[in-house]
Length: 319
Image 1 (cartoon, rainbow, N blue to C red):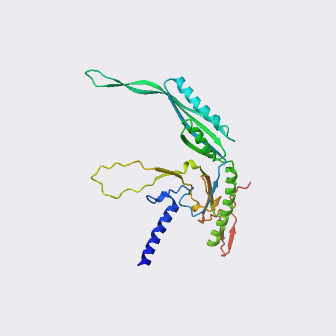
Image 2 (cartoon, helix red, strand yellow):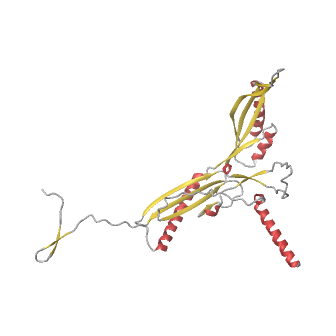
């Protein structure tokens, strides 16, 4: 009995450990991921398709973080002065960091309205829109090379009530070099696949009709983030009761393209969000043998003696 109880506990805790190793994404229910890998197709009537897919994970060498800032005030002068003060003071501190460039992008400058109540003795209340001030929006772009600097920017900007990190863009100067490397790798692999197909079929594709297509896809981290809610709801039957639910915490995580469907992967281990290059090349081979049409006609003359003679019929006019 003790042995059976121990086996049960081992199974229970083994499942718990596996779930923790996969992260909270599986806490509520098993997630299913869309296949966002590259896939180019030929028409379905093609005889043989030979395909090679490649993936390259590229660490960014430059980043651009975009922060949004909003300022309101009663007059245009007040709004501009307050906005300029916040931006100037924060950027003066940020520009002291090594290898940092900044840019301020104007977004909008609009009047703000509110409702004023007009009450009459024998009528309902009337609400009239009246000018209440102005709203100014700008974006601060910060270019940097060290990803650890982002925390420093957030700390500086928060001192001036700038909290909205809109997005972070990733850039790399190695993309074209890696594209050439991927095409060379794919070329060798597809030639090897063609050779294997010919050996398996016991024939050659030299004179077969062929078509070729290829393409690249580049995925950046901002496109890869997904969200989920991790919580455990009560199983009590509360259909006849008033239920006040609270907002659940939503978690975001970066889900890169998995390398399970590729023939080769460059830089396969991914620790941080990276730029991903996908390459696919396909060759379509039509093995259908077409009938050979003879263009030359042969005529045979049977003589009265029963002899057979070939006649050379020349259709060209002779002078």
